[in-house]
Length: 639
Image (cartoon, rainbow, N blue to C red; front, side):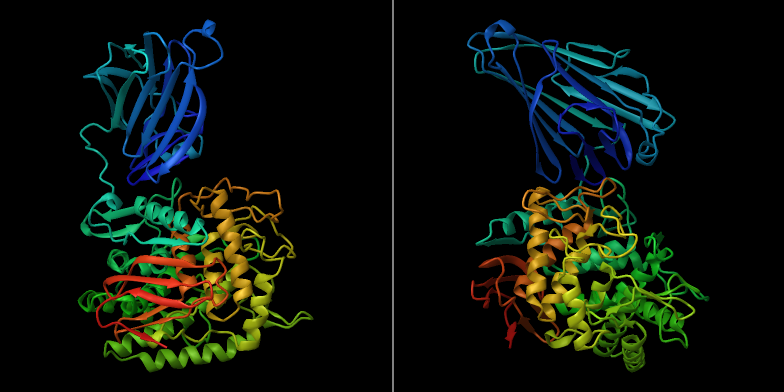
């Protein structure tokens, strides 16, 4: 159970006690400032009876105990612990006894001040000795320091045992509380970006026939706010961390992808993300000039690792182009245009005389999804250059047109079922034939002017075959899209690139299939992902096992998945806005609606979205008809 309000983090089991085992503890900026917090009342640990996440940054644990075994089977003290990611925990004792109680309370505390990475590798080290400090305890080592203060102050503090003690008199029906505050020396309370009044995400809401939509959108936005980080050197710019607990920092490709999926909540997150990454862009001469640097990513058993820097560099101009259509202010877009131009120059230079863009550079395979990213970047980048009055658009369109022509021949594998796209093309021209979720990027073409989708790399017949494959049982697990078809050699339901359901790619498949008018397949994947979200308490993890869904099953968690994760939380926003098919063109002052005509979730109302810098609300009826209920002045509905 993870509470997050970066840079603060609290990780617990459903037992409530922090025992110091595994990842348990309070963290601040990746360091465990408290690993052990064990409560004993009247010499015994409370019996845990409920544990619940009450918000992205808060969890509630309830336990009970009997102070006198002779009093019968009913508990007479209820212990409620409210744990916050900011390093605060409130422990409240409620008496249900018919007589006054004198209740001794002990809290055993400890920490190793270890780094999260060391803990994950099993190298946390021993606990640090404590000293009595003010109204609590303090720990200090070469790794750092940490202090716990208590209110009210304890009656006794034993540094050698890491123990704080109180004795309370509880009248019948009475209550008493202890508040613990843990933080590094000299540090104030955690100031989470998402909790500030200046959060870049609009507080949108969903309502409708399916009660799950309201919870999913609310939880998705809460998780996104909890994952927000601020650039310390440029505090006006915010971006998303990739996910908790493993990736609490900036991951360029994931940050850009999540900012793109959350454009219906406003463009301020896109602006902050683009500005932050523009400052990392490689300059000067050489083959990497213009790239947004990123680490290598495992691509599964069939392909060598890919470079996330390639993906980020191609996402940058595409995000800027689409953000302008959603209403990014022109001064901010103009400021970011030179960085986008450098990304597009890198694309043409990296592709060189070849039609395809290899990844990683140089000499890698031409991956299916990389060509889809490059094609979208070229078309949306050309649109961006044209509308900003800059040269280069025609050359990019010409390259994209040539890519479409050759891709449809070189990447398509004919078979008795109608064919499928290859996963990649090796440098020697050999096609890698396995079918995986990476193919969904072929359906993610991007938004141009007038609410039009950019053309895709596949022709109409090939798109239809791909849609049937994605909606078939080998790819659709019933909980979402498998990373690798169940029919492929090497399929592993827990393989993060070879069979697990990746939420982000499933949501892209839903949106892409809906845009291409394959609503049956889109609706099936949508229902599967909503079912999984319900099973995970509507906090979708980055991925989970691609096991077949049955009437009595539930999706299996992946042990290495981040939860919450930026792209998974953003996927919740994309799923629900796909139902309305919102395609704005703020530059032209228009918006087009292309809702799912089948209305798979019945009526749905989305309020508090942002289009053209103003609140935007839309209703989709049970007949699949969409109606704008709130919009910016002068924004016209386009047929």
